[in-house]
Image (cartoon, rainbow, N blue to C red; front, top):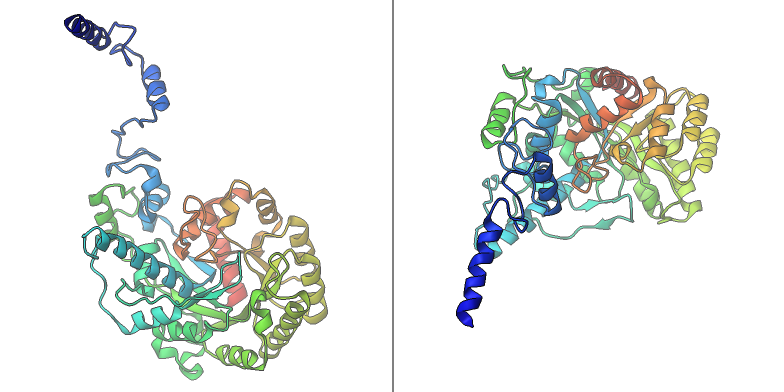
Length: 453
């Protein structure tokens, strides 16, 4: 009996291994369509033998879902020198980005250490510098747009400290001329000032800065010989070539200081004095962000409105543009601005998610109102926001990230950085039916007109 069963097994094995057998999972004479269908059904991706094929594994063997910033940038824009027009991130929280990347590095190193792999990873931790201390302190807080801010107490000791130059080197490609880092929490004003002074040590006083400093931006690096070609950053060799071929300049850093509506409950004479003092820095270009947020209501409506009105008065007194945060408060923000701000004042409605009707109402009444848009415009469900982009006059558009929040596709869910601006700009250009370079040139001119940088 046992021998009979063994004989049957041999016969069945031979049948299933035959290319003509109906028991064979994949006939050797199957068509490519049949092969692809079977592989899809079994969730086995086809191997990619074309290293330049977009969206597939590339020479590194990594699937696109495992790509990093370099791979996505090279896939979409090629070498950094391919982008001819510079851009500015007009609203970003550099201190919060440094905090996030530092703590992410700590968690990664902890996992490696738990596996007995040490804490080096693919690169050694940078040596401690004056800026690493500032980055650690500057990163002590961050305010998420989804909830009230919380002071971060996690130590960053023994971690691969993230500094501003390192952030630029590893997370920004292309001609990023400048960033406007925004401090809108009580605990971050001093730290952002420290970052400013580290980034521009010769401009610690207004006298040293002058008009020459205000109009200066970084010099775009000379394009490499490969700048007009595609560099395959999906391979190790391609990534090394990309890093060697282009030395990313460090963007100029500017700042805005104010109190976020989430923090309005903390508004008092001490906060007012601290903001006034911070705005004396020669690289402080605006007051904000300030405004109204009725979505989370982390501060009562009346408290938000009073804090906003007092900040508007400060801006008028010191003659600074105003960065506005408005969420689910379109009518109130419009009426307060009408009542307390001259019609020709410069207003930057940052991370706008209000509908087209609000954009038209504001731009018709305030001739110097500009609207900034983030990676939100790349999200499939953000049709209303894309409608607002379309309704915004071409000469009133600004680009921003609101990093570390609001990363555009394909980075959604990751830490947003100023290097993501081209991805948002591409969608903005499509909405306005212009080329990416035309869009970047216009928005750069808009930024100069609004901020003078």
